[in-house]
Image 1 (tube, rainbow, N blue to C red):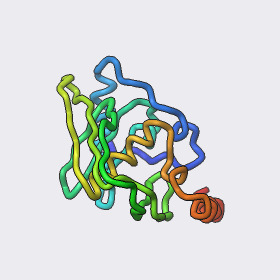
Image 2: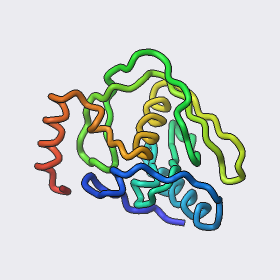
Image 3: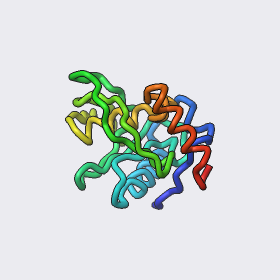
Length: 163
């Protein structure tokens, strides 16, 4: 369908918990196509539906050229202790901060046909699963930062050309 514009920090859709997808209709099929198109450009590891202005529980991912999506994802397991991991966000362009993330994560959801989708792994995949699921819960990675780093990040947001 289309590469959609990314909503930026301050847009209310990014702070609201997303609704569960109960019925897969033409609109949901279009949403998934848009999520896949929007995550495809280089440098994008994931795009959550709220980032394109849709308050539904869905995200796409692009990890090492493996592109896919999941509907109604839920993190069902994490392993290890959270470690500071360099992280940015399309909705907060230009910022990059160490964010505590578990080194391994597992998400369970469904595809358009109602089949179970299980995504699990470490490294960038684990980080993306946590980051995108946070988006669906109305959480931006800035909220995960320690207080001193969050203060710096918020100053960077206020001083940015896009804010």
